[in-house]
View 1 (cartoon, rainbow, N blue to C red):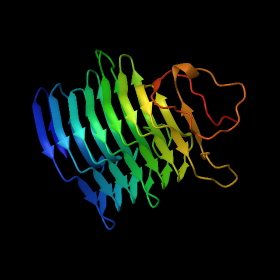
View 2 (cartoon, helix red, strand yellow; view 1 turned 90 degrees about the vertical axis):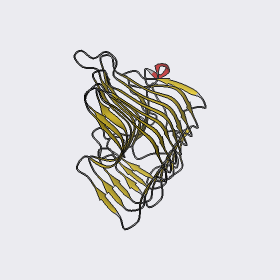
View 3 (cartoon, one colour; view 1 turned 120 degrees about the vertical axis):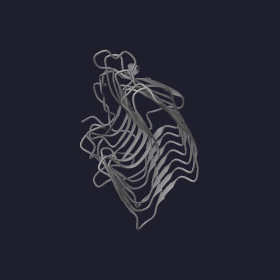
Length: 282
């Protein structure tokens, strides 16, 4: 769903209603994307999706380079003003990552999502190979303003199923708010509301939850919580660590016992630095 804009062209999709649904017997496969809402623009043009309503619901199987991708990529401008209804999964979403909200901005490219409401929900029967909210901003040679911006994310991220870290784009982590920038690249989530809740299984090579990787998040509300007991581990622990990258946390404490993952207070301001520290360091 969206547009393919080249060179200096402009285009607008005013309204897409009733969302996208893949039933329990459905299979969607794509070499690049299973489901894509947005624009690929390698010129300097402008593509706009004013309103996408009804969200995306999957009870079957979706697979692709990105399983579900909402956003854009390239050196032009892509804007999704409003995306409502969220993303709900009770099936399998496979990709690199499974769910990608944001984009890849190259040179002077600008990817903007105004408001995404409804959040991301993975039900008890659902499996997702990684969730990335953010992306990549690579200004490169001659680029001065590569930007990926999500103004408002409402509804948080909730997992009651399984999240696997099969994604190289999100660093083999489970749930990531962040990405990668170079030179004059910028990634911003102005407001993230609803927090991150896990009552299922997050099994990855690196961190289960990463908040603040090379990204600015002026307002994060809703806390981060984990309620699932794992074999040999206490409740409120993840199979992998949770990592928070904030200016106030540029060094790890000398010793810290594992604690419930409720480390993000209401209306927290997070600004990324290169240093990582783990809430479950051993």
